[in-house]
Length: 72
Figure 1: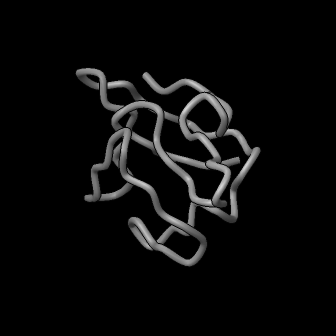
Figure 2 (figure 1 turned 90 degrees about the vertical axis):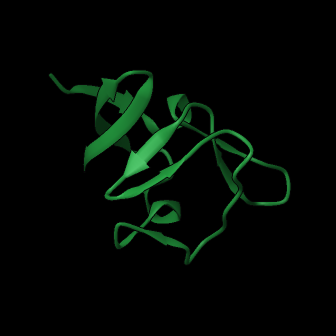
Protein backbone atom coordinates (compact mmCIF):
# COMPACT_ATOMS: atom_id res chain seq x y z
CA UNK A 1 0.00 0.00 0.00
CA UNK A 2 1.35 3.42 -0.90
CA UNK A 3 1.77 6.35 1.44
CA UNK A 4 2.37 10.05 0.93
CA UNK A 5 5.79 11.34 2.00
CA UNK A 6 7.34 14.77 1.50
CA UNK A 7 10.47 15.23 -0.65
CA UNK A 8 12.55 16.12 2.42
CA UNK A 9 11.72 12.77 4.05
CA UNK A 10 13.24 10.97 1.05
CA UNK A 11 15.97 13.31 -0.23
CA UNK A 12 18.48 15.80 1.15
CA UNK A 13 19.61 18.98 -0.59
CA UNK A 14 23.36 19.35 -0.21
CA UNK A 15 25.18 22.67 0.09
CA UNK A 16 26.57 22.25 -3.43
CA UNK A 17 23.01 22.08 -4.83
CA UNK A 18 23.06 18.35 -5.42
CA UNK A 19 20.30 16.01 -4.28
CA UNK A 20 20.99 12.82 -2.32
CA UNK A 21 18.61 10.09 -1.17
CA UNK A 22 18.31 9.62 2.59
CA UNK A 23 17.04 6.04 2.10
CA UNK A 24 17.41 3.56 -0.75
CA UNK A 25 15.05 4.80 -3.48
CA UNK A 26 13.72 3.26 -6.69
CA UNK A 27 12.44 5.48 -9.47
CA UNK A 28 11.31 3.46 -12.47
CA UNK A 29 14.02 0.85 -12.98
CA UNK A 30 16.77 2.96 -11.34
CA UNK A 31 17.68 2.29 -7.73
CA UNK A 32 19.99 4.57 -5.77
CA UNK A 33 20.91 5.03 -2.16
CA UNK A 34 22.56 7.39 0.29
CA UNK A 35 25.86 8.69 -1.03
CA UNK A 36 24.62 8.98 -4.62
CA UNK A 37 24.51 12.67 -5.53
CA UNK A 38 22.89 14.11 -8.63
CA UNK A 39 21.87 17.51 -9.88
CA UNK A 40 19.23 19.15 -12.01
CA UNK A 41 18.68 17.59 -15.42
CA UNK A 42 19.59 14.05 -14.36
CA UNK A 43 16.72 11.73 -15.26
CA UNK A 44 15.62 8.62 -13.39
CA UNK A 45 12.73 6.84 -15.07
CA UNK A 46 12.33 9.94 -17.27
CA UNK A 47 11.84 12.09 -14.15
CA UNK A 48 14.02 15.05 -13.16
CA UNK A 49 13.65 14.92 -9.36
CA UNK A 50 14.99 18.48 -9.05
CA UNK A 51 11.70 19.74 -10.52
CA UNK A 52 9.81 18.28 -7.57
CA UNK A 53 11.76 19.69 -4.61
CA UNK A 54 9.39 20.21 -1.70
CA UNK A 55 6.54 18.24 -3.28
CA UNK A 56 4.81 15.13 -1.94
CA UNK A 57 5.57 11.67 -3.28
CA UNK A 58 3.45 8.55 -3.24
CA UNK A 59 5.75 5.71 -2.19
CA UNK A 60 5.61 2.05 -1.37
CA UNK A 61 8.28 0.87 1.04
CA UNK A 62 9.40 -2.59 -0.01
CA UNK A 63 12.18 -4.25 1.98
CA UNK A 64 13.46 -0.82 3.08
CA UNK A 65 13.46 0.62 -0.46
CA UNK A 66 11.27 3.67 -1.09
CA UNK A 67 9.62 2.94 -4.44
CA UNK A 68 8.25 6.17 -5.90
CA UNK A 69 4.92 5.52 -7.60
CA UNK A 70 3.64 9.09 -7.96
CA UNK A 71 4.40 12.77 -7.39
CA UNK A 72 1.86 15.41 -6.32
